[in-house]
Structure formats: C-alpha cells, structure tokens
Image 1 (cartoon, rainbow, N blue to C red):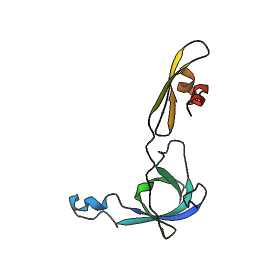
Image 2 (cartoon, one colour):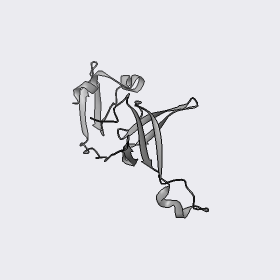
Image 3 (tube, rainbow, N blue to C red):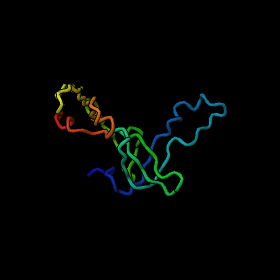
Image 4 (cartoon, helix red, strand yellow):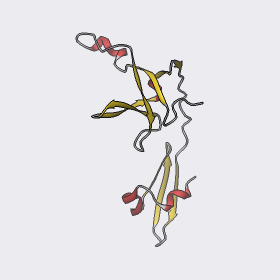
Length: 131
C-alpha cells in the first residue's frame, strides 16, 4: 500500500536540502539535518510527477510541495524512492478537422498539442491519439 496516496494523513521526514552545503554559510547553521511535516497528501495539476503536496494548518501557507527523492520516512517507516523509468518522447502529426496539421507530443508523462484549442483549454481531442 502506498502511504503517499492522495487523501492520506501522514507524517513525513525529509532531508534538509541545505544540510550538505552547510559549510558554505557564514554562521554554518542551516537548521537540522531533517524536517518533519504532518498533513494530508494532496496533488495539484502543476506539480511535477515526482512531487507530492502536504497540507498545513497555516491559512496563509495552505500546502508545501515536496520532492519524493527528499523523503526519508513516512509514518516512521523507511521510505525508498524509486525514480520512474524515463519514457521516450512520442511525437506525431495529426490532421485537424479543417485539414490543418498539428503536432502532438507526449514526454515525461505530459501531453501537448500545437492546435489553438490546446492553447486555450490545455486539452484537446488530438491528445487522445497519443497513448
């Protein structure tokens, strides 16, 4: 069972990204080696595929984005991140309903199209052609 499923309430322990370079700071203090955060796992469409969101109790700071590779523990259980296998870039040219040619690209889990509809709505019928 994946503890980082959207909607789960978790406590995670993450690496402090400044810790390895603490010797570069004037006073040498960059905080502890690890930080712990508690909240509900969430996802937004603009998150990278390797990021999760975690809600906070602060109304002016509703959630934090955390890269999965920085997570050390989830609910006091060791967490090992396995980076997904990079899929190859898929690029096809499709014929639009009015005879125009559009390029549909699928790369790193994201799809895009050169048609005007995709430019406005960030989705279009041409995207269904790339599986």
